[in-house]
Length: 354
Image 1 (cartoon, rainbow, N blue to C red):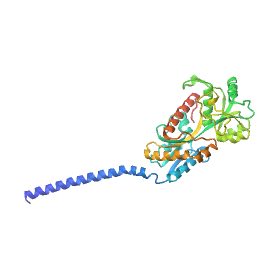
Image 2 (spheres, rainbow, N blue to C red):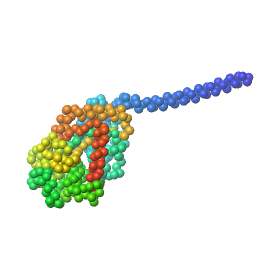
Image 3 (cartoon, helix red, strand yellow):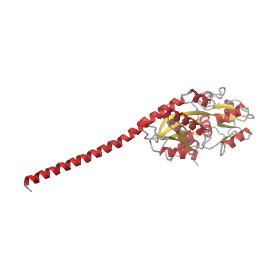
Image 4 (tube, rainbow, N blue to C red):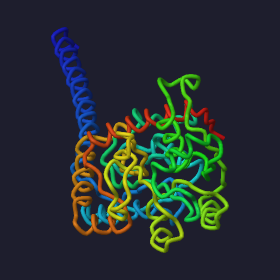
């Protein structure tokens, strides 16, 4: 083989090798571009399959009712089934932690709320999730107050009379509570608000001295107050209504800033000399942190539109619930305030998680 022929062949092989390398690089870049494009395409097509909504409580309660209501409305708006999964346990913590660890693809929604996303942090600083950091909060769904009720035989006709009696007779008033429930938190906040408290140290606080009687559940506690075994307690407004209407309980105050539609003649604690007092039951919709913004925006728009429906508002107000301010910014700020509020109350009261 001539020298010229050898030079030509080496040149050809070198060119071929270079072309092959370029082709390989091109294939790799194209593949990478394709992989990067998949999430964007998935966001554009969202939702293309059913969506799961984790309700971290058993079926049948207020949280479940609210979860199913919003799931029904989102199903209509998103054109895909939104299926409720009840995952109860540990006061809502188990289901909430599972939701926080779900894939951030928009196919797992979490019902967040006062117990699992505010109170729980005060009871257990080492939760498996951070309610301020591990979620994208979409919008608040419902809000409802507790009602301070007394047995009709109790010698108090007004909230002011109750507080005056409690101050004049420390330790003589008793109340029922379910540990860590919203009514328990409302009572601890009331005792601290009516008493003298400053800062977050227990030694700087002298709450109103009343004797708490713990119950394992709301049913037995309600039975005892109806029977006159305990004189007072806080109770959710939807549970209180039929008993107040029947004259079996007397309502002295509600814990929302504004009067409740079910009890227009019952004053708020806020207007009764303790400005800013608020102790609410609430829930909302959230997604795992990292969910793409286009998906968050799409779900948020559908949820806000649903909550502005006159039919939804009427349905909620019939049970004493109100539709709170809507939107991601509003709900994110609200969750942060509630977490701070209840962590402080729990620390001052010295309440420990089980």
